[in-house]
Length: 180
Image 1: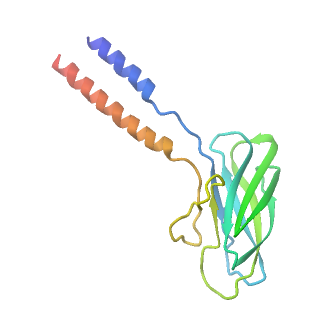
Image 2: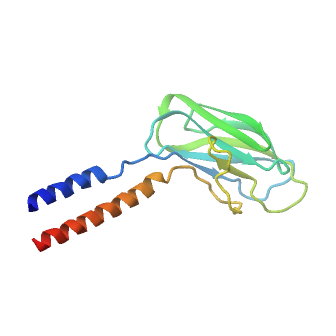
Image 3: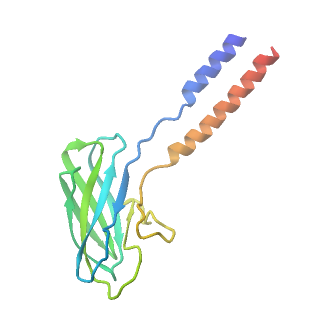
């Protein structure tokens, strides 16, 4: 009986281990220093494929039309071509592709804007969002130097639930074995 219970617990432990979901993350790096009206400012978007090999990907970027005017997008050192599809209302979809799949972390794109703000002040100018979701990733009032990320949290929640289930099952098995 004892060997059968231990075998069942080991099999459950193997079956319950959460499968790893690789997340793709993007970081937005704002320009530093004082910005002046009429100046072109460059934002950097970094990418980390979290071990995945990708031939193409995309990220959405919002900007405040009253402060910034989109100028251009250039590829970083990760994908060979990057283009911006202007969606209007301060939204861009930035798509990158490469003939050779890319894996790792580096600079995805450089996005240049012209500063058209009419007066001094401090605000968040840009944010990244998942192109398959219309909502920007930053939903609370952000700090201008915040670095938004995209990715998945489903695997973390699933892992916590499955680990808790495994611990409860193991504890139950321990008490059954102890009584025997």
